[in-house]
Length: 239
Image 1: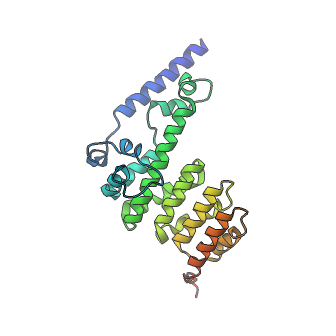
Image 2 (image 1 turned 120 degrees about the vertical axis):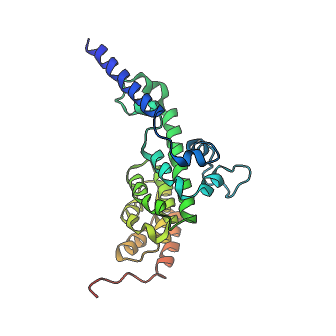
Image 3 (image 1 turned 30 degrees about the vertical axis):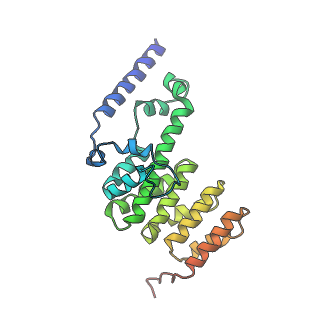
């Protein structure tokens, strides 16, 4: 009896999730990107590919759409993509859907999030003063602290593209300079250099990265330190 009740409860949750997903409000940006949803374009974005690339125009199209699509990109990072995601978040061993979709579904969702962050960074680079870009910084910081290594790597890249406007992300970036993932350490150190805010805490973190056992991390730290030393440290308000 208890098992039957649990099954009915899970089914009800999935039905509610399905109704919510189907009836979710479509943002204006989804309609304006050449008649296709942003998620459709994101699936065609190549991470690290040439820009612009006439053969794969997805990134060009989304960047051209501008800051207006940034809120939707942020929603991709945190919102359920479908009822499948709802099932994936329920306890293991209870929901057959979790076993059915498995790692393949998780990897597709992860890829979509990485692509969303990558596009956000490209938009930020071209529109650093846009209100939507500045408002996306807390979302990127959240992802940088708790996302998967690949998403965190992309978030560091995006924050670096924002320059000094992302200075409040420095504590989270500094924390990633000692991450186990060397690619993330490189991305964090590079982002700190691009943000270009010279403080004792920042200099200490980059100086420590100079002695990183990974040669690419130490080389990136050398370049970042050279950039930071060209910036005057902010004055204390008491002076």
